[in-house]
Length: 568
Image (tube, rainbow, N blue to C red):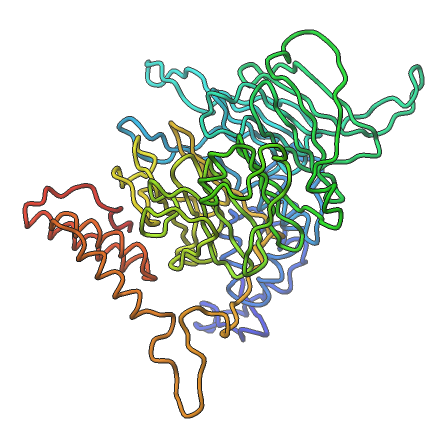
């Protein structure tokens, strides 16, 4: 019999000691290597639970030797544990939590399915669905090609997504394809990678050079390659423009933007030609700016600087009018000139749709701007916004995604669960549980994985990427009291504010929206939307939604499809 004896927990009497038979043996008498070896056979979930019992087990379960053995067990082919303060623990958790889930919008089956998991993958860092397949990049630069295929299940042939995989290439830094939401246009995959190039022909000396390799998404065949000078190193690639004038935007390690133009219609022809790499105007005219990341669609590009500033390039008048509500400052002869957005705080990350965008600042606030014809801004109405407008009932999202005419937000509902919220057009099942769409963010009927970190949607399917990196956390800050909208400044002789956060004003606005509805059915649907806006707990929202459904059925309203039922 073994007794746990820990100074922080105090001694514990064993069964035999209680009976007066023999003396218990403290687990601290065992060699630490033996204890670590035994504990390393536990599942990761049980290991984390054991480490929360007392100080002794916390130190033992947190040892790098334990996580090294677990990492070897989870990924026996992993050669390098990576970098960081805790490399083995980070590698083990990356490989334990990795997963790609998808849910088809059509058909009878409305649940998440998991794709095949490549054994060689060291966690999942990025993914991109194309017309026929899915591509995944891991943390060591290996790009995997997940194929759709016919699979025999119980004697029947079924078409399954992402059920076969091959290694497309190694040494990849980033990749991109056609930025439009419709995957039909994603014919080619552009991969930013590092390759060894010979310095002088006929010698063995070589040096690392960055290059862009172009692959056919249908077969994975490489059809084009361009190599850059060894002095130029890049970290991100995005595409913008039409197929005949496809602009490749490359972000350097120093925060500068370079661009080059290729004709996609000629990539499959066996020829060699030289392309010109030029400095983008955002870096030429604003040399003091250091761009941290960028995102694009077919006709516009969004740059986020390391200081949290946002700059825009819009190349077509129609998208410019949708985004800003006017054509006053649009110059058709100088479409690359960046426009600065006026924002109240530092921006951490963003999402760009066809004609609307979303921004998340350092305080976790969400700002939306652009066309709102389908309610894709989540503001509760369908009025366009020509400047960033805060969505007040949502805060601190994990990630944000903007599509053609709808938006998705991944949010932390509690310590041990996450939920997916959506707004905009619900046609084709793109907002599961809300076929008529919604002008505000509402909870969707999707069971979100615990470690979900990224998402995107196509016309046919919703994709959710699961991965947890212990060294990456969104550095949200608490909003200072003086900057909270709706809280009046305290004056002499007054106590606490009577209406913190402007709750009464918001409720009056909700009542006016319900009063504007003409039928009982419309009022019920509006009330469901308002419940989704209010800062309630998930269980409270589910209760009110279920109660409204019961009232609708009792009144003979048909019991239309409402928000998700309670998940136990």
